[in-house]
Length: 425
Image (cartoon, rainbow, N blue to C red; front, side):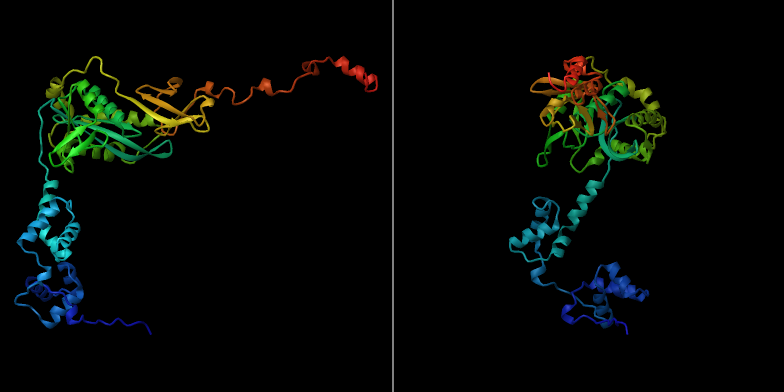
């Protein structure tokens, strides 16, 4: 005989107190033929509570919550203040802080108290105000990432996307990392593709660009390298407010467009094939009719924005010059962004400095240049200089047996004399 489920109504002292309007809502839903389970789900209360009130027909005239659970006006104001400051938007933390101050209200009471503030904050974060800029004024930049199949392997590829604010012309460049020099190289690539420089570049609060953000005073500090780069190219760096990435919505949409259209599950034989695909795809993106401007980005660019951009600098400073420290592996290679570069065998297990430039990778030991390679972009590739393997294996001439005994310093006739003399000389 199987187990029988017994529906036991809760004891009177187990039933929570319910507001009058909630009990009335129970009655209305029940009159519409709704079951206890549906009513409990809609009103967000326990099923046993619904059964209790509907079976007994208990509709309270008024209900007064216990004083220990209520918050007076001063405590409510304090709860909101803590919610917006110390608790950083966490009602549970507000409850704990209020309890430490002597208030005995429940967590649910605190949540109801700050609910209006929470909704207002959420609405502010989600609110999007379209901000249009004149031609040549602003370029928005952002990084996205996606797993892409390259040469049969899933590789995490980082995409810098740049969008001109007025024309919506789009630029995208793929990287194997997201570092200072990757941002700078990507931005320069966008300037070169557009054939000019806007007045300002707007990014988010990326940790590689912004070293410090003061929310109280609404100020931020950029890293010196990013400031120097922008100064060299004559642009003003800007960053959107924290948690307000929608203020650079053009490039946010651009990142999604790249992921869903340019890549969209495609596989590539090599990283170079991916780069070539993106080059061709950017031309197609420039010819699409944009949903906001209702014309193609290229037409809008050629008509008004090209002339508004300032010319490229004649002699800009090096964009990429990253110096990192690496320990040489047992096979005499150093790893840089999944790409391995060879060094002389004598440096195995020693620390070296790697200078990664735009075109070359130079490796130093104690200030001495010990290896230099052309910079590679293919992930999981070995770049080998054959001279670095000198001495690792003997040549065939060194390992082949001598063709005659004369190579040991004696003539064969000497051994014949020994044999004839019976083994003595």
